[in-house]
Length: 440
Ligand code: SF4
Image 1 (tube, rainbow, N blue to C red):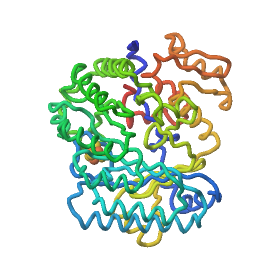
Image 2 (image 1 turned 120 degrees about the vertical axis):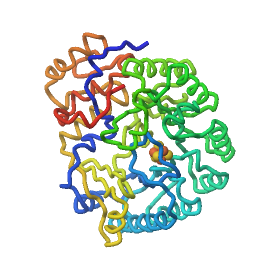
Image 3 (image 1 turned 120 degrees about the horizontal axis):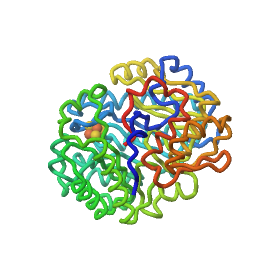
Image 4 (image 1 turned 90 degrees about the vertical axis):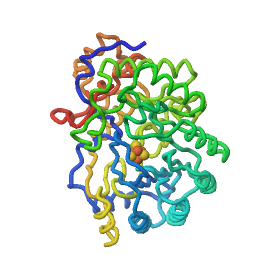
């Protein structure tokens, strides 16, 4: 069982889906930098694509994504036209170089568009880029799922899906503005499995309004009963000063930090008992699943989609808000869908913010990624091991870490504190912590 050390959880810390984090992005990066990064991609370099659909059938009150309601067909049609244009712009600059082996659709909810439009989108990608037997993953909202979607996902070669579930409790669902009965989720899972799409992730949350240990464990039991391949168990981050739609959530019904810690710890113990392998600091995977294998064979990565078995260094983000990641650059597309459409219509790559990653950023990013993915890292490339040992003395005294020369090794009990350890290697984290949530 994990031990509660409140003083270690006081400082808000990033989730480190990139390093530097998006908080360090500025408008010093734009289309020219994106163009240069695409120009560096070699003939046989392996690539990943991420396509962002910033629309949902309904907007959940807790959601921090850049997404809008998919209630105006014309708006969706215009957005899909813009995606088509951006795909063309990127393909033109690649000139046939690079081989795509991973494609992820996220949002928002990719199934907010029509199934036939999804087919057209996949077709456009397949004809614009060199793609060979890709791993294709899609985030799905069970509320908009239909038999037609199951058929289309199967026909387009989708082999991994992630379902937004959060909680099976009707009371908690009502408190977060996301009502979806268990039957609906069960039916969605059955239809996917009926089409041989077996790799199914459930996104679940603890720390939700009105949620106690028993309610959380009931939700986890349901996820285990439905044989979720992986479970992402996130702590709900209540930051209404940053995400105004969260004001609809009753803050007085939220568990406090101690209760959140206990929920995370009990959820962890429950899932281990149920046979899941812990991956990173908030994922659980069935043994033999791609994520568990990636952790075992050392290829697990952390990117904008969280912990992933996608091993590539170059990820091209397509769509409003999408972030592209290259060894020397992080570039985010224009967030506003209207401006995004105007840019691509004018034949411009829509990158509007980002950061150039220096060699030092890359070394620090690697250390942070290793800590979060594998619970250990060789910090020699950063120099000054004694200085870092000093900064982590509190963690060492509590038995959360140990050192073997320049190797930093986290104990299994350090899992809830992994981000508070990683932050020590983040040169940017000094005055900006208000933008982040607590580590638990
Ligand atoms: S369905 Fe997902 S992306 Fe859409 S509002 Fe809800 S949580 Fe956000």
